[in-house]
Amino acid sequence: MSFQISALFIVLAMSNLMNALALPKPQGGEDKSIKLPPLFDDGVLGGITNKFYEEVPGVKYTVKEWEPDYYPAACISESQSNNKCPVSDMKVYDVTYDDCPQPWTMCRCNSAVVSSERLFEFFARVPVKARVEIRHMFAWPNQKGLAAYAFGPDIGLTNPLQTGDGKQDMNAIIHETGHVLDQGASDSPEMLDAISKDTCVLRPYSQVSRGENVGNVMVMTYFKMINRGEYDRVHDEKGMSCLQNQLDFMEKRYAERMTPGGSCPPRLHENSEKKHVPGGVLTKRDLELLQRDHPEDWTRHEDHGMYPQGHTDDHPNHF
Ligand SMILES: [Zn+2]
Image (cartoon, rainbow, N blue to C red; front, side):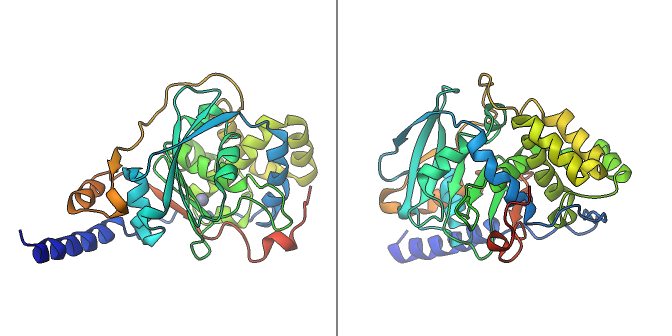
């Protein structure tokens, strides 16, 4: 094959890849929004979650950066989806937490919003029994209103994990953990039954879909597991019993996994394939392999509406 034809083929393959990686359109048919009034406004969760970071001691960890030109396949495909980052601008780290022998491989674009240290420190506060269900962590540059996303077992962060007043905010990372751990919970008969018995959802963003509802309630499940006394106080003072059935469903399903401490269960996912990309330039074979990197049934949750406009300055700690 001549050089020109190869180059053309790469362009065509790239075009196909971009189509394959294009974000899924909302599924037609079933309406998964929730028609219950919200208890809190969207800014409130930032008010409570900025306490979480201090309350949960981070598991200690060691970091080993990968040698240049090697990347996990999932990092390559995500970097190219929506052109988040040139491959050559990514750094890859194996982060080994003291509570688990196997490292997590994380990829960070050099111009990402969140620093590598914050990425590692926040992930250190995700309970190990939930952490083992997460495969890769990504940190990307700002993506036009996108706070974060989960795709199958992978989580991408596009926000700084802090409120406008500079406090640490675990809302996004626990919410995305909720998406990874969802695995059918949000559409389960038990959850639908819980919603039907309740008279509110946690916040306006919960109305968007059942999946977002699980991500949001997961933050309260984590809250309860890390500080039961404070949770009970907030629960009673703020009238959270209007979503009691949802809270109970989530606690029953996730209490163990959202409790910090304990030993490391087996990881649910192997790292994606380690690939050699000299100079960060993708070849035709790279592109072909990327197209079959992930199962078709993985769900992509993109959190565009997670924070209200100007939430960080307008909503001080409500609790
Ligand atoms: Zn979400």
